Image (tube, rainbow, N blue to C red; front, side):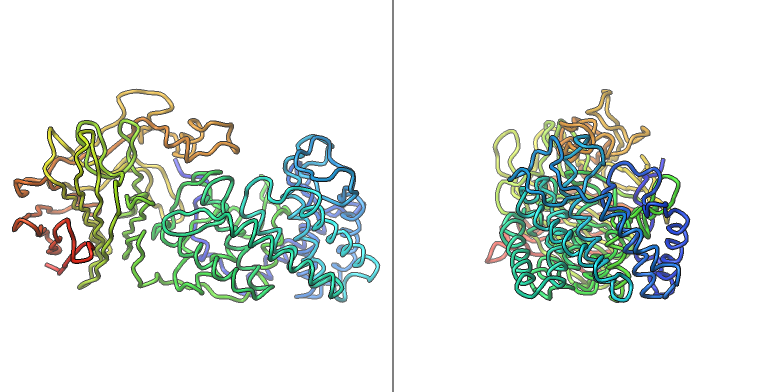
Length: 610
């Protein structure tokens, strides 16, 4: 069973001028064959997300004409633009629309669906999209659109902006990508208005970004992020927000957009595995966007010096939006226009600098959550999620049914690079059912092929074990497929357990069900509105790797040691002088400092190759 939308890495799509000209040539032929007598360019099956789609194709035709001067295109552009102005601009309030601040304004907007009152909740983003399509046409109109038609489009675009920022509440869906998109529309529109009017729109756009988006950013993993549908980040819409930040910086030059884009880009880089897999978010849990992400990932990969293009996109939408038959749809066309216009090249190598919330080398990567517990582990092409036991999720020691990974105090991190090895030591104070404060020291070491995880904690009562993850998916090159298998070795006995109970709140990795499907089944609302992250947190139990304590550990502590990746001999040894813990494996020797750390309380670690 393959995951349907995490396909190829986006930087593998050719992005030369010749490749883009071929894309536009294909769009041109499809559009000219589709053009209706009325001038419409909508896909015949388009029902929702329709208000901007014909105008989106118009903008692509305008770009194609500017690049190639195809004599068939000026008439098609004028006819299709007339169609939008005549048939797709609405000025009467949509019955049932709940987000108006003023009724009967007569300001233009675009509808999510054409039928009055049928599904008005989507009108705000549809109007943002229509504004973006309009300003792209205006940018490309020179020598193509007559003055009277151009003036009418400027008036409508200005009306869209006023509807979005005056007649309605701003960002009513709490969707960062939509809100930043609106700001971009204002910045681009300002260039087509008389100077005084344009400067007012530009100032308003920047103020909206500062006051309504930036001021409400949400913290996650050390970063401040534009909120997405009530959460900090969504792996479908987050990279789209990054594209909007790239365009905002391109058209305005304002450093605020570059700074916030850098922060979002570094966050994406840290949470994304080396193989480009990711999951999680308040709207979709493992769906990825396609061409809509390219601009931001490419633009900011160059700025932060890391290979963001490894992000696995929905390559069915690798060039533009399509319907079920694979034919072009104009939705999101503005992003393809900007992607073609931007000449930034992909940065294709990882950042060499250590990142707090990531450990990465070669084909191994670990992404850490806000508590510095692994949120995603990649080794030997297999991806591991945090396992669930008794409604607790994570990687860590389990004693008396209680998972010791939630910190009760400051979590400290030490990164070391030595002799072809990369390591991260995480020290975490935790409290169990007995209310005793203990210190968990987790060491992660990789040589780029294998990952060693060693966890040391003061001696635990009973029969503790290490919850070492849920094997979930594996990399097939250009596809990701579900799996329940794992290449993992343990110094103690290792077992794979599956939920003893059935039902939606027990996830068995052997079943033909994705994490996203399971998460939505447990979410509070219907698919598309519920938060799958919240749903997944309701999971009671899951398939889990369970490792017993390693033999030969010092008497006063439990040590767990596992290795992810290619099989082979694995017999680590441990020694302690009462404070430091020395770990020797077939690949390295590590000395983990005492739990109190150095004079500043920071963890101490020395590492050398075997």
